[in-house]
Length: 369
Image (cartoon, rainbow, N blue to C red; front, side, top):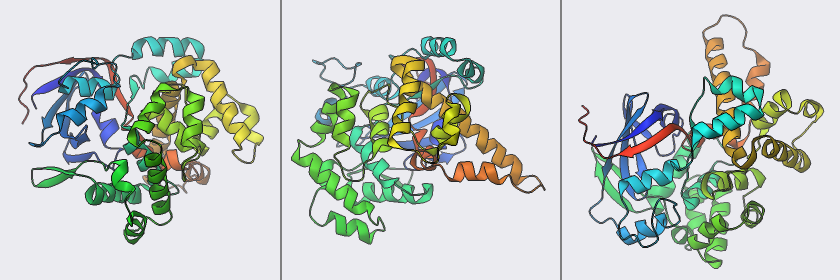
């Protein structure tokens, strides 16, 4: 490793729960593709993230610069994009988590109680195309199949980047490549089922409206407008639209609501929801409005802290049950099993949830065995 990001960083929380792209190549060392490059990450200590960038010889710097132009960290007249630019954009290092945690703790006693033991959860900024089609793959799916589908998209429709330690790495496919003839039929042969139609149809719609530029342009409109546009895509419902808004389109107040978030809300904030029999559109909006009123502009980030903290608690409870001779608590099991896309896809979502408190990028050289 030859560069670092310093600050409170929990790499394992991101990578171990993202089985789509991040792979643990050896204990504590993780590898994936970001911005057309292969990255290897590890954590030296609680405050230091070490990284190494493997750059393909054919890296298209013009395309990379175009992708980063919407970043607050890249000057509009900048001719080169550095590794630091990419990490600052990906980790959203311009946002002070310390200040947000203080504000959220003042607004909510429950947040104040859990935040001390779950500090630094940062929402990442993912490429809109990759995020959108990955979530389409997650529809009514399990983690293993989601992983297989995303890898299949990359292998069959992405670009071969390079081979690192005997493994070939691919970029995520472009919208144009997913809109080609016979893509739907091919994806069905690969086991995508009805999601093949969703992917093909959404890619066609996006291309008809300007391609990936159309998706990225949604960063420049209001949350309401961006969500309304995303809902025009086949296979995209309110929750997936909110995930794309929050994790890719800079809509920091977007609140993705699934069964698990509904349960958290009913238990900790909105007891009247305990009598509701289903997650209706009205309840969905009410939950989002409640979080936005409580936590403000970055309500979506606060929501992610609450979700990930609660999820970890239930995972720990499950682990305890596995080692117990007592009969498993069916209520807890049901609560976890009934969670829809976000919960099922939580091991993917932690790409967007990574702790990088007070992070500052420094260019220094460090040897790691």
